[in-house]
Length: 62
Image 1 (spheres, rainbow, N blue to C red):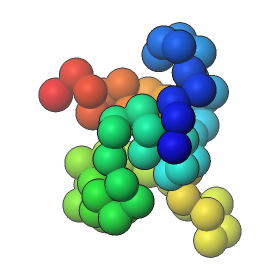
Image 2 (image 1 turned 30 degrees about the vertical axis):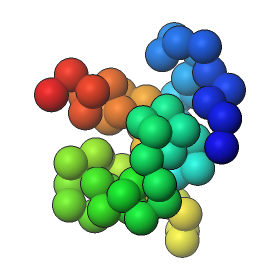
Image 3 (image 1 turned 60 degrees about the horizontal axis):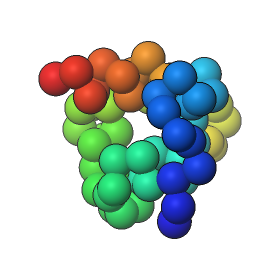
Image 4 (image 1 turned 180 degrees about the horizontal axis):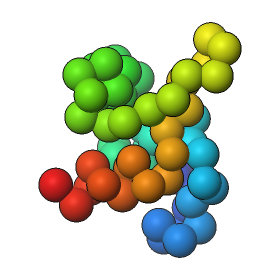
């Protein structure tokens, strides 16, 4: 999956797991494991998992 964002400022305020994967260069299972373990903060909207842009930036700063 190709990363369609040129830099971090192009990211939407809320990301899908599918957006997170190419940004971090990880697979689906790893993305969900990072979320499940709390390393990347997420929110649940119904059955969907969303990642706030700030949560991704916070993870990258660690």
